[in-house]
Image (cartoon, rainbow, N blue to C red; front, side, top):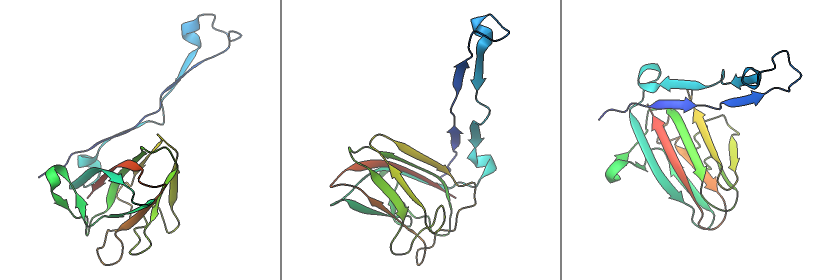
Length: 161
């Protein structure tokens, strides 16, 4: 099995300047802001070997993601033991705020020891680890906790290598 990832983080904004600029032409008054966009092929820039993409449901408002016990494509077992999170994406499908943080037991500190991301309904979070995240370890650093309301759901994609 091989994994190749195209990672894009793009926000392109067209800003039309006021008519009081030197250029009278409307097309020359448009400034495009796209200089901070990122477009990478992770098979070249970062070692990626495993992926898990799934819909995670909360049970009574909580769930734990075990990076050493994930379900991958066609129900395959995926373990990130000894790897790093290269890309993490989460989208809140519920009607209420949902958060993700390091786990209460065997915390995986993807963004440090106090990371917490809160997502309102319909919002999403995309993280690129650039091979700088900690190693996943089944006996000490492999859990992330979700919290929200009742049985709401979210989409999760985790690329490891």
